[in-house]
Amino acid sequence: MSEPSGESATMRYIRAARVVTASARGTIQDGVVVVDGSRISAVGPAADLVAHVPASAVENYPDATLLPGLIDAHAHLTLAGDRRTYEQMILDPDEMMALVSVRNLQRHLACGVTTLRDNGGRNRVTFIVREA
Image (cartoon, rainbow, N blue to C red; front, side, top):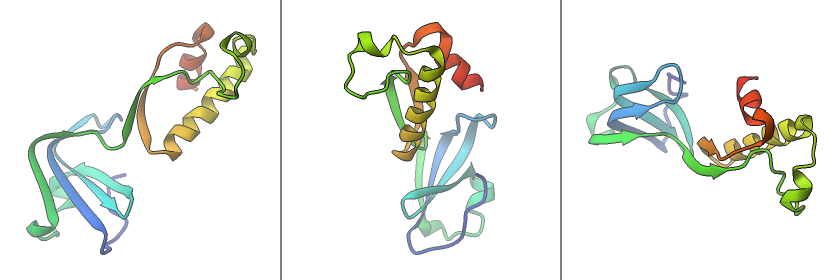
């Protein structure tokens, strides 16, 4: 995401000293997060995203670091959350745990979580899913 999708009455331009992208772009110095309604529509350098925006429309946080999205600091992606006990769930084969992990990642994204820390899974299943 680098270009805003278009102007709207609900467009917000949030500018900060740093924007952590968690992508190959790394941390953007003097970055902007563009929010259109309830969705992040663009993330990038201020020079690219607010050049044609009135200064009064930009929210400035000159000493802040932004990390767009929510953070889940304690997740167990391989666990199904289907009311079975832990002892029952760990009997699932690795392939099933991988599928459960993908489903749980989709659920996290749908809820606005863009960063998470998995706190452990069996047989490197979560690492295999990450690398897939």
